[in-house]
Image (cartoon, rainbow, N blue to C red; front, side, top):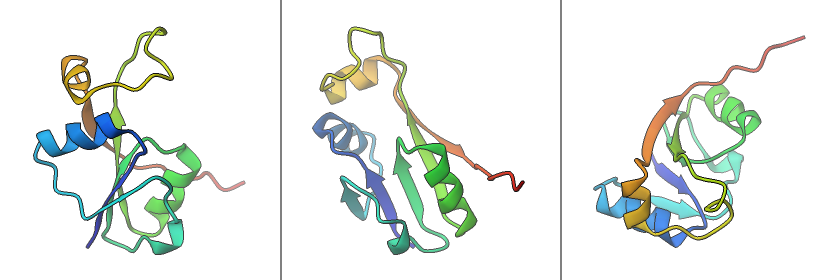
Length: 98
């Protein structure tokens, strides 16, 4: 089992470390084909990728962070993430077949 953290943000990497979250691989871009059943994937991914991960038997934990409009698109420190209540929440997404 591998724990992946998908982020390009230094503040998020520092936040995870400060929270004591054990991560095996930190990547800017996730290659779905490298993820195996039983792996844990942390980050902020689009739902179609989460559905694909879940269909492979991987678990997905979304980095939930409510930002004001002024903070969107800006680099955020680990400290500010903590103040804003950043947390990891597990989601399961199932693609509805037509």
